[in-house]
Length: 89
Image (cartoon, rainbow, N blue to C red; front, side, top):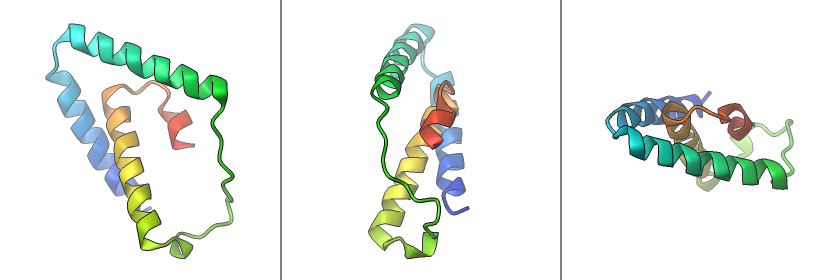
């Protein structure tokens, strides 16, 4: 649950910023985001993640990195929305 807060804040900020950008720039941003998503999907960048790991076992540095990561994922989700489920997984 501690990752939901930075993700929600990031998504609200991403949505707010994307609506203030002119359409031609949004299209370029969307193109770049889709190309990056395609590269990630084709190369199937995976990490060994144990579903048994408890949040309490993470160090403070790892928790901060996770919060920052989910803020950025939320930002992307609020702005672009495409492929957000893949990024969250």
